[in-house]
Amino acid sequence: MRLTYLGPLAMGLEHPALSGVACDEYSPNCFAVEASSEAGVHGAVIEGDVLVVDETRGLGHDDLVVVEMDDSLLLYKTFRIGPRFRLLPANGGTGLMATARMVRGVVVHQARWPLDDAL
Image 1 (cartoon, one colour):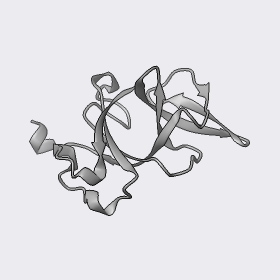
Image 2: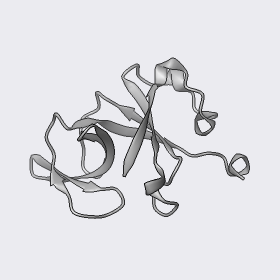
Image 3: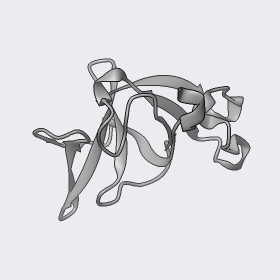
Image 4: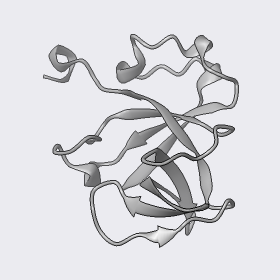
């Protein structure tokens, strides 16, 4: 699924989903992205969710990661195969093998708009 870059977390982003998040407690290497409408409303990540991504965290098995391909940011889930990783689309589909240059960071926090604000 496609993601929209919101900016570095240290900049004190103003987004309704981040209202309860202490942005200053995260590493200066963290940035935020928002899930696009193609995420839909079913699944672990839905449209409008804001993901905090750490650029310096190493990959692990079953991590959500942000990948840059064709000038777009995309969300994938990692699947470890020995010393290598396969990237599986977060909303299903066929995957691809990861390269270090593709991965922009690992998701360390997921924030969602409060339900009463969304209505």
